[in-house]
Image 1 (cartoon, one colour):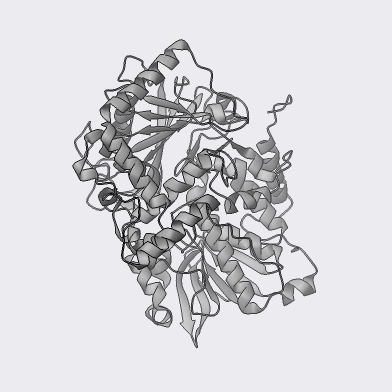
Image 2 (cartoon, rainbow, N blue to C red):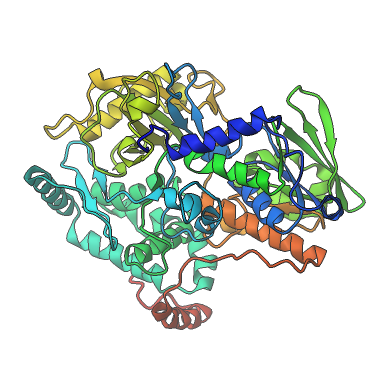
Length: 593
């Protein structure tokens, strides 16, 4: 915040307000689209159905290449990546308390999403909203009933967190207790499994490890509880958001490999852990929408896709419902379906599915619950300066205290009623196991019970070794993602489920280009190099969709850059050797079984 008390984000919000005051209705395109009117009318039209990261990326790339783009979004721009206001929480001139579906996490293994962020202007930033990324200097594995393991995140130029002698003592104790709880032969075996995957050729990964659960690959059933909690369940449920017993080794291993290379500084866009320096909409989504409007993109907010009409070998129209509930017909030259898979597949009729059997295979893709809850505190908790992974929590909680990472001014001065000084944002990854307070699953708890249960599990992880990190007296309020409804009753619903990765999933994922010549798919379920439900996957799939559209229209516009995950050149020779062994029916040379 500058000396006048006006933050950079207030400047952006003021610009948007000025546009409304000038007569530009919310959710509509500017009165004058970018470029000459004749050129605009001659350009092909594209209906982008969905305004999450995938849809906004597609709109961005298409608008830069001269297409007429309209984005239809049923709820709010940003989708699952957006932040939102807590209703009725603002007092005086302050803004409402910020909430979100889940905290943002943008690691250095991402390349395509950061490229887009650099191209979104932001006042005072040379590299656009990318400059709003900050790197927490440390992280922690919180153990219930044992000393927590606190670890720095090394990166050139990274300022280490200030430590007291007590912090050092606890860190060393946590390391020793963790090592002591993990038998040496089990640690050695896990390292061997990691090396086996690292040196496995692509064919073995696709044909063998894709069909092998991580639990089986790591032989977790035969190992100690510490091995299972930290190396099997901890890696999958808390990071990849799927169950170790079901998760594809290909998916878990690929992401683990990428994070190791990132930590070593190989092929990385930046540090292994990065977050935004403010609420997502202020730091990213709102500036993005403003930039797209300046490029001529039109937005229709509150419009819901009901069906993609198919006939004569093409999509003939998108049948949508407007904010008043009236049915509308949207006709465009091309259609980019950028909805999450659980919503997209409801709009694909029998004739369309018959035209491209790949669409029908998407019915077999699975989603699960991973939902955020925020706790607003009147005192800043003495927590680690970064993410906390509560690996012993029944509901697989991960959390971060956000205010210390935000640069828009004092949290209490900017948000809420003036008494809230921090937002503890928590992701709940496990909704089907009993908790410690009520003995029920999260789906069978009311929202109030979910909040109490999560708070109790956080305290069990953080307040268990003689230091009080979270105090009941500091809890001001909480906010659960509104996409969740009906919990505690017979029919719980989550409007924002997350794609998970059981064995065989990779071969079910569709390509961005369909067999229907004017239909393209964008979303984190589309086959992309990162092979995980992420914002990077959504962004990458949109780039692939735009490239397919450019190819089919014979456009001379430059293609979108699609960067794959980093591959270490020195490992490639070992992979070539493994390819020969795989084709001969032999196991990997390092595989001890």
